[in-house]
Image (cartoon, rainbow, N blue to C red; front, side, top):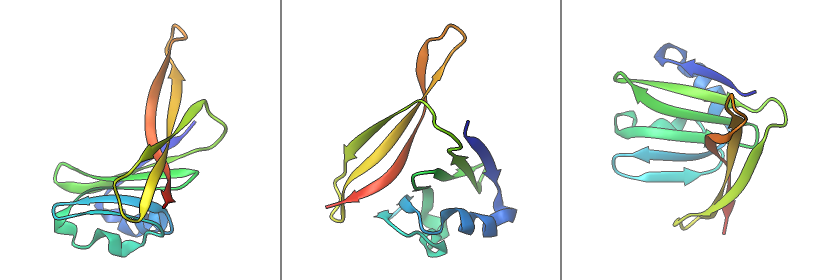
Length: 125
């Protein structure tokens, strides 16, 4: 199963380790940034940052605001899980598609449902 870790403002250095080298989609008030090889500079200007997603084949980090503070949740794939992979088209000049993974869980009656959807990789033109 995937682990979820919450990271609050006092642990920003660890956040830099989590995101380094990953693909990203970051939403700012004035722009949308999509790219590869993320680093700490992606958060600038922080006052305009709304939320950001950092991802690769094994990890997904979601940075968001909670109670007027930035925090992050990190999800790590530990073993083979039931999932469905899909490719979605982007309207972006550098990247044509994003591969996403839907994780399947089962309720107490054995009924399958999608527990989480996350981006896995950006695919260039």
